[in-house]
Image (cartoon, rainbow, N blue to C red):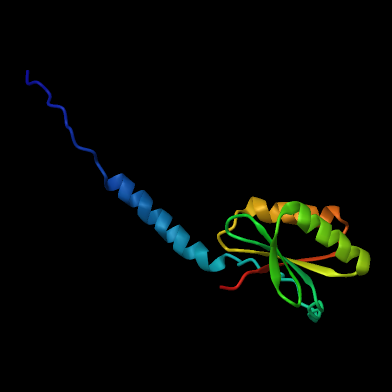
Length: 131
């Protein structure tokens, strides 16, 4: 009797048939798929920017600068809190803008926002420092 030899090949013809059937199914069903729609919110009229806001700048090193219409000056955390309290005493509706340098740590900007919110300012905004 002859010894049977093992066949070491994979028959890929059935796999090709299955792939072609799947391709036809996807080609037929793709045009029938309904595309989803996204309802975007509408935009109303923009508010006017605040007049003479206080600017709290966070530099790249994480230090603070307090600015107003006249200019800005470097301050430490305690001086920043004292200046914000004094300004709030003079004008309770003053707006505060927090401006962070693009290379400043996010943590430093959040600390500035926390200090401002702790002083109960109602009008707080964010802006970016321009180079």
